[in-house]
Length: 226
Ligand SMILES: Nc1ncnc2c1ncn2[C@@H]1O[C@H](COP(=O)(O)OP(=O)(O)OP(=O)(O)O)[C@@H](O)[C@H]1O
Image (tube, rainbow, N blue to C red; front, side, top):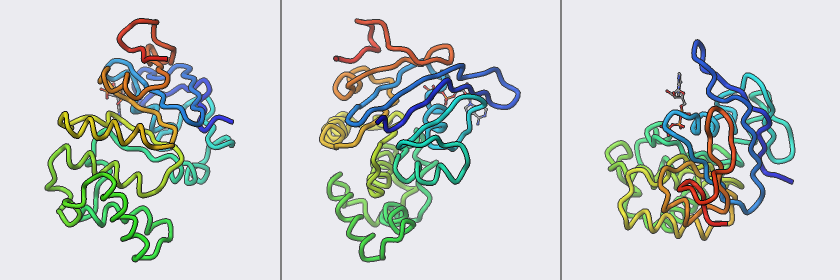
């Protein structure tokens, strides 16, 4: 059974021409699906629709075996599909890194002690322990990006939705992020303009163009290795 499925999704922001005009997508377990498309094509919009932060004007969203339409339907989706936003400032809102990473587990009912154990484990795994007590809004762009990923991994999601995860990362951290993502069992949807990153990670690729998703032309720079 697919983990996520979008069927004939249409979407327009109020007073604007449609961005999505019949977009279809299926994410199967174990896949790392790369999404490409020009700036403003609607890739981030599509990720937001997957987790119910935006509602399509037509079409169906299915997640984890059920159709999702009402806000209540998406609560489970947002717990099981972790979205790493393009802009870390949309995601980080606590005074310190540890509190940001602990927020999700605490919200899901973990005790303070359990949440702190998760913070240690996730920050340790990402080699970010040195940032634990730092003030989140004073981190560098790349540090914020990695902490954002930590906040999502702390929720132990079944699916990762990553919007430009290499933005602001230096070469070393991009390589570390690549290895980390390759080691994770979760299926992923990865929006990235970085062809090298897509080739390393992607098991499949779709290109968003004129509001629809289609496989890229074979051999074009948006394709990933089979
Ligand atoms: N809240 C909003 N209100 C109105 N228009 C919006 C809003 N958010 C995004 N848009 C517009 O919708 C279009 C699609 O935006 P989106 O962020 O989904 O594109 P994208 O493919 O992710 O682009 P990029 O590659 O530049 O990140 C853009 O033209 C953008 O300006």
